[in-house]
Length: 132
Image 1: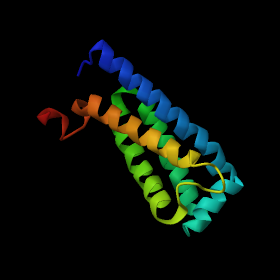
Image 2 (image 1 turned 90 degrees about the vertical axis):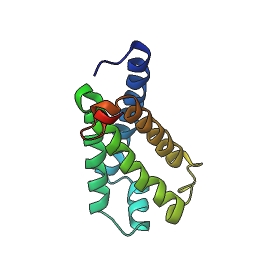
Image 3 (image 1 turned 135 degrees about the horizontal axis):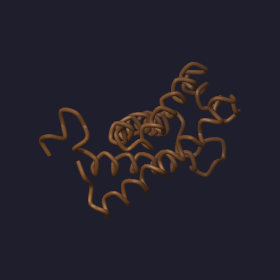
């Protein structure tokens, strides 16, 4: 599937922004930063879900940066961010440890970027793309 220039630029901007945010959070998850440990302890999922989430975010980031897998990376990012947004909406709250809602906002940005990538590159998705 060949994208027009505008779609390609918008998709790459969304892919890079989402991957950059996801990769940035890996440091905190994998090093056991107090904020990250607090979040997953509050959710009752420390430490294994913290590591699992980090691995999922790493895979999504790599997939977003490879054109052939960008649509699937966008889907994975959407799934991970649905979990994050659900956690913020139910147990954590919008603001976590006085961050002013930054983590929630970053999750929203990644979610929207994932939607943009999936929509633009939807024809790359197996069993879906050939219909749209």
